[in-house]
Each structure stands twice: as structure tokens, then as C-alpha cells.
Length: 103
Image (cartoon, rainbow, N blue to C red; front, side, top):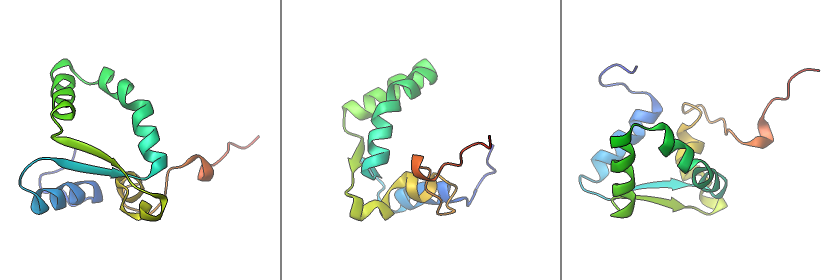
């Protein structure tokens, strides 16, 4: 649980979104790899959410209040997961840099 007024990179990103736009739509930008991963896991994510949250998310996506945008590889420094998925440490969580278990 995060304390009130948390300044972790994830919350800083959302605060930046709030300051830049007081209205909808919220735009989430992903590099091609994370855009593909989002689409592959979106149904699993929705199934794990409580019923009311699932309906709200579906409604917001349907009404284009939340937009998921695909960036090019040249713009991957703007990707939400690349920037904040690792807690803002600059570590990209891709299959290329995963550590194999010792055998």
C-alpha cells in the first residue's frame, strides 16, 4: 500500500498526466513490444479485476476515455512500462534481459 502523496515513479507519471490534462482522454503510450504484451494480457487482467472495475474499464475503453497508443521503436523512451514498469530504475523487463536460473 502506498502512502498518501507517494512520489514513486509510477505515481509521478499519473500526477504528470493529471497536471497536463484535467480532462479525458487519458493516453497510455507503449513501445511495440509492450503494446503487444498489453493486448495479449488484457483479457486476463480484466478477468482478475472485480466485476465493477471490469465494467468501468470496458466502458472507458469503449467510449475512448482511455486510449492505448502504440509508439515506434524510436520513441520507446516514452513508453509507460519502459519508464516506470521497473520502478523507474531504467531496467526494461523484456525477454532479452531476463536472468536464466542456474543449472
